[in-house]
Image 1 (cartoon, protein in one colour):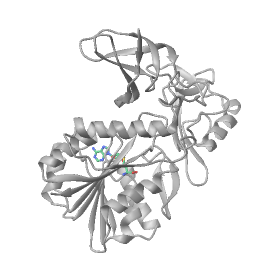
Image 2: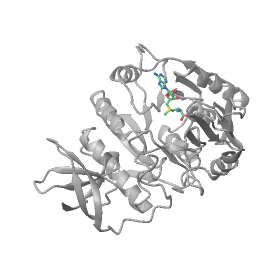
Image 3: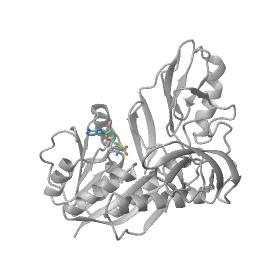
Image 4: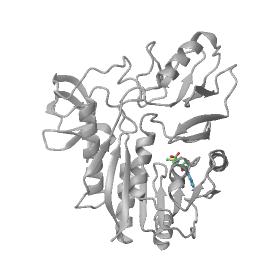
Length: 381
Ligand SMILES: C[S@@+](CC[C@H](N)C(=O)[O-])C[C@H]1O[C@@H](n2cnc3c(N)ncnc32)[C@H](O)[C@@H]1O
């Protein structure tokens, strides 16, 4: 049937309506498109797919990657970047309304940079024929990285992949990890090539060591701007005691440490904790300490502090952890999240515990994909 795409919603789908008014979600639908679709069955929202774009929206653009729509890596290469940002802001706003229960949402600022060549990290699969690439959308089929490289990867990774393509004997199935640090490409798992144990980054004047397998923010252009948003929201002062939860290798806490009295980082990955300690020592920071704890486990108490930063995985926080946090009565809590739905759910719980969202910024850490980072400032009301 022919229909019109109204907007882009959570998950990156285009939303349209069927003849009976039912909502149908269509991958790759762009607001303003008139499309001929097929759709599945279901009681509530149904999923559809585009057979033909009858009249393309003016928000469309030509995707630079020849395997876009087959590869599972990107969702929005066919949409003009200004509109992708607008759509992401709309999705976060909608989540805060619907899942966060907020009727007054602070103005959502948006921070972005070059939408291509930004990714400093990739997990690449290979097969016995030496084909390597990313998983296809919705399957484990392998989509080969085109000769011109992957459009969102740091060009240094693409150059490296070109070099190993003919030199390495891939005679089994597997995967390897590749990252770029400040100086070069770091790798693990390439057959016959020595593994790196660490990756070295330079961020906010610090030299930081992270484990090759451990978490590090993937957008090489936006890391410092993102930390600046967090820093502004935390309003650092000399007497502050700052708790950095889910601190990884310490990047946020260490970047702010010189402006506060003390930083205490907590993280579940023991290797990351060791690297955070190493990083504070190597950078001559004497007021930061790091410890290991399972923050999704039964955390009963946390050290006294007056300001907190939380940067959890997609799953967000637990009510138990929020209860413990609220118990220490911090003046400011800055919450950075890569999932606006769990972020909004948690904001709703914070509201029941006396904290409100005073400011928020959408940081487009993952351009051309449906993912986005949200940083929120919570204060007592
Ligand atoms: C989004 S990352 C943020 C890391 C760090 N703030 C950064 O920007 O590099 C989330 C971190 O949570 C940690 N994590 C995951 N599960 C955890 C748990 N149960 N307890 C404590 N930390 C956990 C991960 O190891 C990871 O370092």
